[in-house]
Image 1 (cartoon, rainbow, N blue to C red):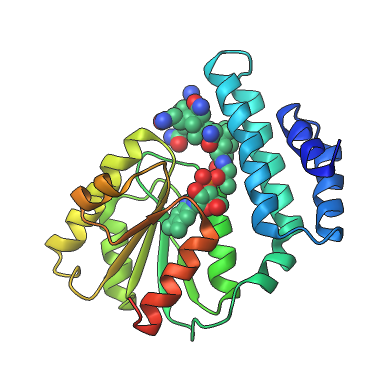
Image 2: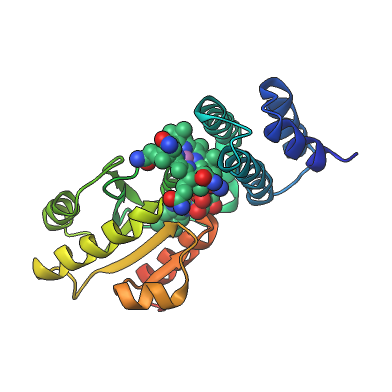
Length: 214
Ligand code: B12
């Protein structure tokens, strides 16, 4: 079996030490960090499915999250090498929306933004719309990013966009959302400017906005 399949298996079986060893092995083999993150994601997806089927419980969900976070730490220095630097220290406000505490994907996106040269304000998790509004006002940020994995996060994203509009901040602001399996139709309805479930893709979109290419 190849190292990629081994890694997938190590995560789904929550075999922590084996997972870290394999992440390092894949890096040494020259595998792109984006591809490694995708394998890790597949792994935690399987854990999520098992949780749904009641084969795994919250402890396992927590462990899967932990394995992912630690693996991201290992990947950190290598991720920096794959993002082009073009941020010019523009400020980007990022947070996980109200009602949702998932932050692993958000943190990956932030690591990539920072390595691309952005000044990132990380609001944290479970962030109500008014906090996003306050920070965007305070910093004059041109881009704001929401993360969310729960279905209820969709409503919170919607409410946050409405609050930014109501505060008169929407005109010069680009909004990108990520995490959830959102589709274009939903995004258009809610009024954000871009969505993606891939942090690397997200940074590319932000780069284009900042360069004025989109
Ligand atoms: C780990 C995990 C947890 C951990 C979170 C730890 C942490 N610090 O984040 C813990 C145990 C705390 C947790 C709690 C819960 N969880 Co949970 N969790 C997961 C799990 C297994 C993995 C999520 C994850 O980290 N994936 C890895 C990351 C890297 O992927 P990602 O977030 O998609 O991010 C990538 C992209 O989307 C993108 N990205 C992410 N955000 C952003 C933002 C922007 C702007 C951009 C550009 C890109 C971007 O970048 C990343 C890399 O490309 C998922 C299963 C799954 N299928 O996802 C369930 C899952 C999300 N959880 C679920 C549930 C139900 C819960 C709980 C309600 C469980 C409970 N009964 O208490 C609570 C909710 C608590 C709350 N209020 O938020 C459900 C959600 C169902 C739904 N549709 O609403 C899932 C899908 C599991 C399942 N199949 O049922 N969970």
